[in-house]
Length: 239
Image 1 (cartoon, one colour):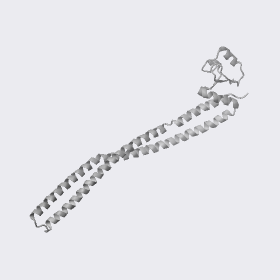
Image 2 (tube, helix red, strand yellow):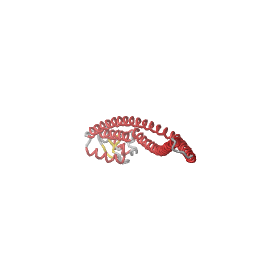
Image 3 (cartoon, helix red, strand yellow):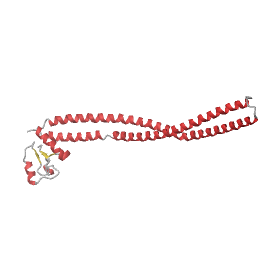
Image 4 (tube, one colour):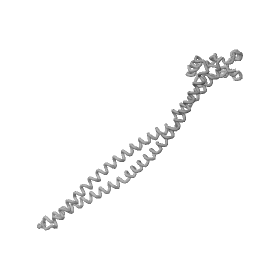
């Protein structure tokens, strides 16, 4: 008669495999990487908004600067004309002086506005520096997590491969129809589809056998494997 202890070993290894595969699917590094990716997305979105604001301020500052430079050049040309002797009319000289004054006032106002924009940009510049530093930290953390995840996955995959081989060896010691029946019962009863007969524990099933059934099992030969009439699980008698 076949050694039905092999069926219990198959079940034990199936339970081990379930645990290993669950661990493989739920490694903490994987969840941390997902959370880190979400944080990175938020960081990048915030940095993009900040960069858009900064770019707009830079554009306006350049416009002020360019206009101020144009006014400075125009005022310089008028001053040169005013003092090169080509202006002889006092009225024209006065008008030129007023225009030069107006140009310089406008230039000064534009330069002040440009400075205000530069001041407004300072916190945005700081935010971009901080975002870049945070991005670097996230990339370093991501690399460390990916390395740890790969190592844990390799360890678990090795353990799974070993358990699969052990299960195949254990299953080879049991009649194929018994293994097939067990696999069908496992769908319903989960990790304890097969139980070892134990007269001292009501038969070993979650539902205690009746006295008549318990007595019947006591007299069955070693190696017997039958579904329990009370709970439906497969009961194996080893001795």
